[in-house]
Length: 277
Image (cartoon, rainbow, N blue to C red; front, top):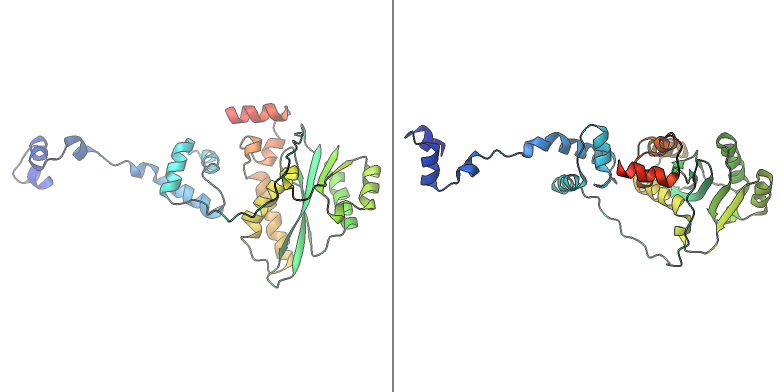
């Protein structure tokens, strides 16, 4: 085409007619380079946060001033081949699902559960994870090779003094959570302790199970801990990132700390307003 125009001096119209090319196709300029900066930022985010899917990327891109709708984010996400690899799920016992009331303010109800992992040498350690069900904020965690019931109550009491627990604690029916020491602590602290007694029903304690899944997927499965001190340092850094950066759909796309510091409103109304924004 360029030789016909430059050599014999044909017009663009005549050259297109001789070759059989539509003029609009010849004049079209590809727009792929328009999204190069967005694609590069998406690759950077997925490299830093390997378990983030396409639904969470637009929220982080919007913070960088690169807003886009979900359909475009999904298209670019697939074109760049950033799809999160799915892990094989385990078979779980299904049972009757009982609804759980949503807390209306911070520190109204906490959920706690144990998560276990191992060091590079093979030694096992346990992590007591405590979250605020209102904002999904992770409270200071306890990491050690052994955590007895008395140790759990001592650490939980220290957290309660800083955060002023108001009403209820939710846990499973593990031996650390069903001892007489727990009953005595509840009576002394005037706190109701709700145990999820039916076995094989983690959905009844879904708040903490959701956070535990994120913790294992994005932190524990990603790192090989050389020592207990290294495990504490890495896990605490992840918890800080979870509380201050990671968005939650239940919080209207806000991080737990952002959601807690918003003007006090009803939890459901706040989520509805944030989702509509």
